[in-house]
Length: 77
Image (tube, rainbow, N blue to C red; front, top):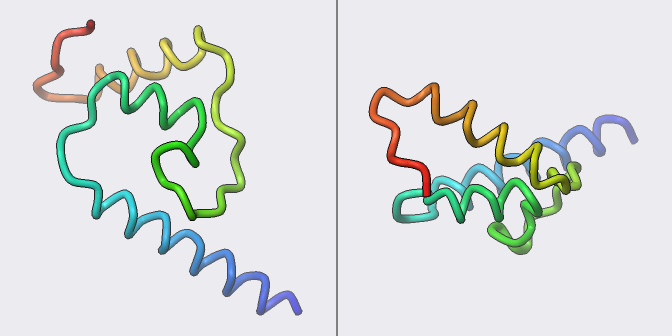
């Protein structure tokens, strides 16, 4: 039973990865905000184990942090 659960979890993660990698385009701050709020909004059909980040202030801080990791960050809106 545990092995089956593990396999389902791994396949679920790969399905998410395939969907995210298959998403064409450049992530905008709006896209990232929507994804962080509710991952299912941008990756429908993928079962997520995280509810997202409901607090707007937390999402803004997280996006600002992620921006610092870029060599060429785009301007904030």
